[in-house]
Image 1 (cartoon, rainbow, N blue to C red):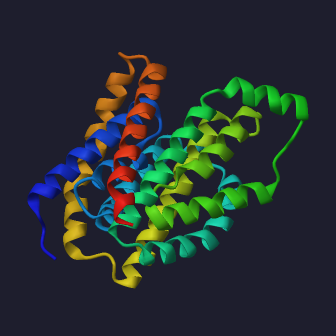
Image 2 (image 1 turned 180 degrees about the horizontal axis):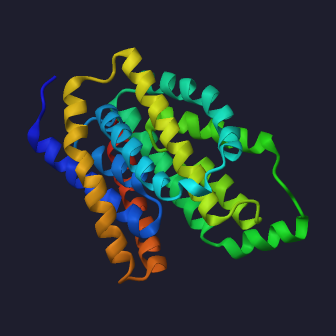
Image 3 (image 1 turned 180 degrees about the vertical axis):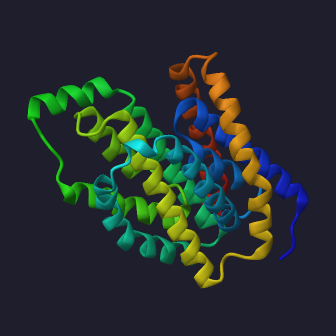
Length: 261
């Protein structure tokens, strides 16, 4: 395998766009990266480049909220991750290109529904207040399990943890900074685990690491641009716009892959 510099350039632009979206809306790095890259390169190679950049992206954000990090809140979903990730990687290795594109499309749809629903946080607050419900460790471990399966299979790991984290924050069990610290620590750990596992299986090749190295500066540039734009646009309006674009992306992936299955 050799480096295709046209594809590498497009990949870097996608990582830049994904980082900008993440800087503005607070979500979308995985969804934008995997959704867009899968349109012009194999999803398997896209997932490896994304995995490396995601480690850097999550590390950058975690460092900014490290004082709010509580390892006891992080370790609960990690317990599920340890089981879920190998299952997801096993699924990943069984997919052909069309199946991978279809799987990413399906997970993008799930992500859009989940993120859209959790933006209606008032309803979640009211439900928790009426029920007085407090999720136990089994709920967190289950979220980690399914995030590990999604992350291992298609590298779009967000939906289960988004639901869990939003519930914990809405219920007052986590502060916003604690949620951000737990999320980035969890996602960074998941991506490191995934990268190590795929390296062990021989799926990570040197040209892919070169592409990832080229794309890494875009993570920092995109974050800076995203924060600047955040100060000048409506975050809520932009967030809904991103959800619409992700939906279109999912439809394109599904429509171009399902006929080939």
